[in-house]
Length: 408
Image 1 (cartoon, rainbow, N blue to C red):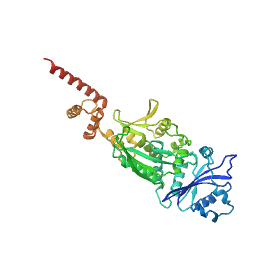
Image 2 (cartoon, rainbow, N blue to C red):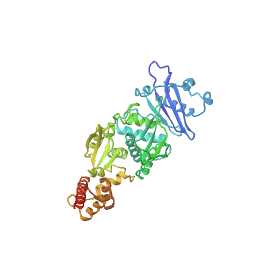
Image 3 (cartoon, rainbow, N blue to C red):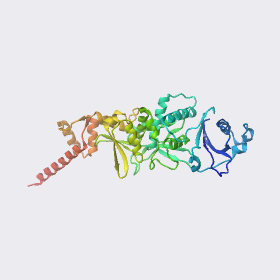
Image 4 (cartoon, rainbow, N blue to C red):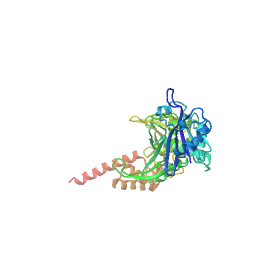
């Protein structure tokens, strides 16, 4: 049965007689957990052995005692604050595979992409024992998930006694393609051997008129590792307000940087008709995302609106790097491809286009709705600025005709 540990060295003056560990196992009936204290001189192999035996009931606790091990230490409960857990580099996550044959200590802080990739592959071997997965594909999937983690995933932080969390995915039902996108993200989570299932949709309401497709994951410390080691945040810091510290991503191979960016764009990106561009909401990480785009030789413009930062990329450049997941036909990707491939009439419109736009104006459609109709039905892009002038001219023309009809 797979399990994991959170390991921390007690501070000076603590009453603990050794290292404090939190141990959890995931089984068919749920999750079992217990805080344990083990002597500081024990090796990782001895700790692994103890945790395998911890799966037995407490009634068996007096029936085993590995060499040099004090059972009293093993069963002593120790509760520590989150400050203790993350105060020094002594804290590690220890992960055991489903056969209890291997364990690893992921780094608390990442210094390079190679360190990330090496740890991710070890985590795969620990959490998804005996299930072969192509290494490059798995690393790309992890980068994509990490992009979502920086973006709009719902992150639920547990109490301050141990670092573990669960996450949820919520995507508007306005675009049916989001159902496939949500399943793709959930599949990235499941690749780590972590459960992630569809939950009841959120109903429509005032602030959410279309409702939302929803998924929820099991809680797991790998998400806490993402938060602390990969994003470089402290436990109390949040991605909405605190800038990440992950310059290590800039050293990643180009394809892995792209998959990270795609995760962020699928989460926080948008496509704009007005100027044929892609925007990614980036606050409070605008400088980092700009550095990432610069490393990919993608021209970008930073703008701030009401104190919030966003980065704008031309549609053709965004299309050139497949900024939205190329494996999922999302509505953003579909719209971007149509914008880039559409016909454009910069000076004079053909008569059929003028007649069609006049008809749509008479129907009372908005500028955005008219642009979408022409794009999807006729593969033609019209600038919203030009359309606005035409709508204004038509309004004046209608007003003049109305006055002429009323003149005796």
